[in-house]
Image (cartoon, rainbow, N blue to C red):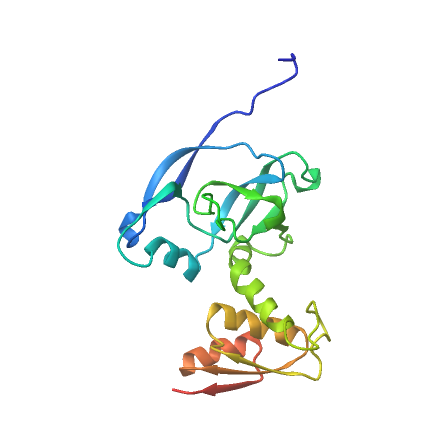
Length: 218
């Protein structure tokens, strides 16, 4: 070992994990040792962890309780600050405020922990004016909404001002996470937005997101 080489220091962190599928009682708070990022990975100090239906559905399982090996840290989405980077990752990410998406996709390391190991390809910069709360809410809902708005015939490949001008978009369930995100993105892209909701309160949420017309079907 050269005199200048230093092994990464081990850092104790708290993490929520589950080792069996089941109700929320399977979740446990544990002390773990944070791993140093490998090639193409970053270590993010999580300030906010988002919760999506896919998170609790995976934890719940589809039937009788089943073992989960290795133990799973839930949480696809989150936001925080990059604490360390692995080989091949841009040095510009070191110390950057970021939002994280699908951290737990086919991986045991989700965002429900103090330090999360995440592929650098699933980390994007979070502008300084944006809060960590906002960053943790972007991942699954907004990526899904963006996909839905860009796969139609003759739809733009990316959204932005003017990209949906002259189009009318119908969003079912405009008060849900994905529906609300779709309203915001469609309105930002200058579409006329019609949405459906099931209560006046949900209608108010849809209007606040930018819906032009709200149909309360309840």
